[in-house]
Image (cartoon, rainbow, N blue to C red; front, side, top):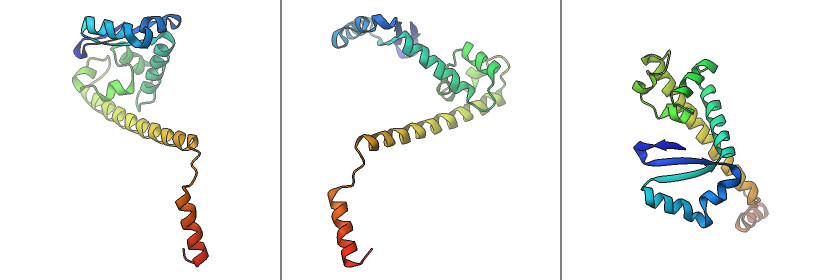
Length: 155
C-alpha cells in the first residue's frame, strides 16, 4: 500500500489473482472503501505495479547526468520516475545524497524536457493507432473533389 497523505489517496497493490475480488463487481468494493475512508483509492495488480516501478526507474536512467548510482539514490529518496523529478522542488532534491543546488536545478530541467518529449511521443503514437484502427480511408468528398479537379485539368 502506497499512501499519499497530502492528496488523501492510496494505491493498493494486490496479488494478480485477487484484483477482481478487491475491486468488486463494477468497482463497488473500492467505491465503498473510498467513501468510508474519505480517501481516493486505486487498486492495482502486483504485475502492473512492478512494471510501473521498472518503467519509472528506466525513466530516471534516461535523464542526462543520471547513472545507476544517482538513479538508485533518487529512487531511495522517493523519486520513482522522471515525472517525480519534474514535479520536485530544488529543496527536495538537495536531500538526495551527492546532490547540490546546481545539479538539482539541472536535473529538474532535464526531467521536464524528458517528460514533455515523452508526452509528444505518446500523442503521436496514439494518433497513429487511431489512424490505423480507422483504416485512414479518404472521405467520399475528397475523392469527388480530386476527380473534378483532374477532369478540369486544374490542380
